[in-house]
Length: 148
Image (cartoon, rainbow, N blue to C red; front, side, top):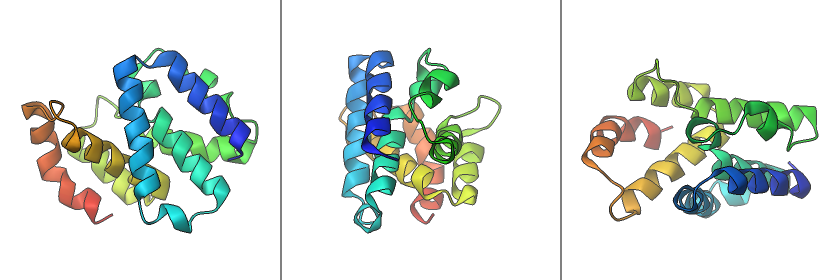
């Protein structure tokens, strides 16, 4: 992904997220950048995983449409890769949380795996956000996601 596309994705996320959700997405992006696999990526791949990290909740948690988000990206192949990762990261209500994580892991989509690991890390590290409900969701699936 080129830097102009990444910038448009960031602006779209900023437009739709609440301040609290934007702070979370920004931390997820930071954790992705701290991942040892990040430095092994090309600049275009780094931009892609950054954009996926910042936008990982935008479809699930806001009124942003798929078309608005996808219109941020000009290149069709890049748009398709971005869509696949965001779709994997969008928890469908018919799937249990375990099924959702298994889908991400089985996909072997490095972008989605890195972002989901960073997302969980932020929830675990952030004081006050690791609710009992999140603990019950995360504890059974953490080993599967860590080993992905």
